[in-house]
Image 1 (spheres, rainbow, N blue to C red):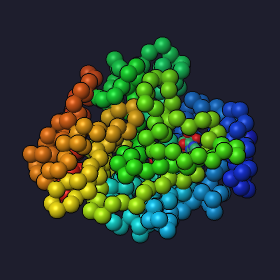
Image 2 (image 1 turned 120 degrees about the vertical axis):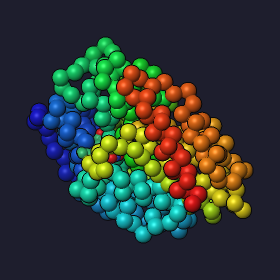
Image 3 (image 1 turned 90 degrees about the vertical axis):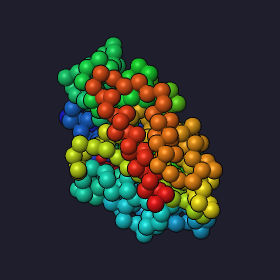
Image 4 (image 1 turned 180 degrees about the vertical axis):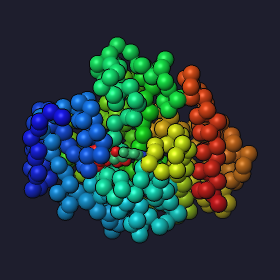
Length: 327
Ligand SMILES: Cc1cc2nc3c(=O)[nH]c(=O)nc-3n(C[C@H](O)[C@H](O)[C@H](O)COP(=O)(O)OP(=O)(O)OC[C@H]3O[C@@H](n4cnc5c(N)ncnc54)[C@H](O)[C@@H]3O)c2cc1C
C-alpha cells in the first residue's frame, strides 16, 4: 500500500476542508476503500476518516415531520435494528440491511459507504486486468469475458453492476440525501446520486471530489404504504446479490394506489422501473398481475453470454417482493 496522510477530523467543518484537498478520499469503515487500496487501484495521498464525527454523522432519528433521518456513518446493523424500521412501510429497507454481507460487516460498515461502494466487477477490481472502467484499458473485459455476475439491463460500454443492497429500497421510498463540500450544504433527490448514463468512464455516483454525504432522509410514508426487498444470491451469507428488487405499494381499499419497483444487481446503477410499477396502479394484488409486472421490469434486457439466468431468477424475485409487500 502506498503511504498516505491519515486525517482524524474533530468537526465536520474540518473534515470538509480536508476533503477539498487534491487526491484525498473520504473513509467510512473502509471495508471497500481499503480493499481497493491494497490492490493499488486507489492510491490517495490523504484519507479523511469520518467515523469520529459521531455527533454530526451517526444515528437514526424520526424528525418532528415524521421524516426518518439516517446519519451517513450509522452502521448497517444500527439501521436494521432501529425501532423505526419495525414498520411495514420500511420493511424493505430493514430486509435489505439484514441481508447485507455478514454480521461482522454490518456491525462496522456505514450506510453511506454501502451506497457509495465501488462495483464488484472482478476485472476492474484486480490489479492484473486493465479495463475501461478502471481507466487502464481500452475495453470492457467483462462484456466478452467471464460475465456471470454482470449487467443484463441499462448498460452502455461497461457491464458492471451496482452492488448496494440499501440503494434500491431508498430509491423506492423516494429518499433524499444531504451533502457538505467546504461551506456548501446541499440536499438532493436520491435519483440524482447515480449517473443517468452510466458509461465506463463515469463513476458509480455523481458526488464531487471531497463532497461528504452527511445524511439520508426518508419522507414520512403515506398511510397504507408497504415495502419489501428480496434478492437472489449464491451463498446464504457473506455474499452480494445476483439479482435484487425493492418494491413500495400503497394499498387503499384493496387496490394499489401508488407503487415503485427498483431493481438491484442487474445494471450499472440501481434501476427504477416506472413502466412496470405503473401496471400495478388501480389493480388488486394477484399472481397474474405480479407476473406481468415482473416481465415488464425486465423488458428490453440484453443478457451476456453467461448471465441469462438473471432474467428467470430476477423475475421470480420481483414477484416474491410484490407478494411480500401485499401479503
Ligand atoms: C464479503 C463481503 C460481502 C458483502 N456483501 C454485501 C452485500 O450482500 N450487499 C451489499 O450491499 N454490500 C455488501 N458488501 C459491501 C459492504 O457492505 C460495503 O463494502 C460497505 O458497506 C462499505 O461501507 P464502508 O463504511 O466500509 O465504506 P468505505 O469503504 O469506507 O467507503 C466506500 C466508498 O464510499 C465513500 N464514502 C464513504 N462514506 C462517505 C460519505 N459519508 N460521504 C462521501 N463518500 C463516502 C468512500 O470514499 C469510498 O469510495 C460486502 C462486503 C464484503 C467484504
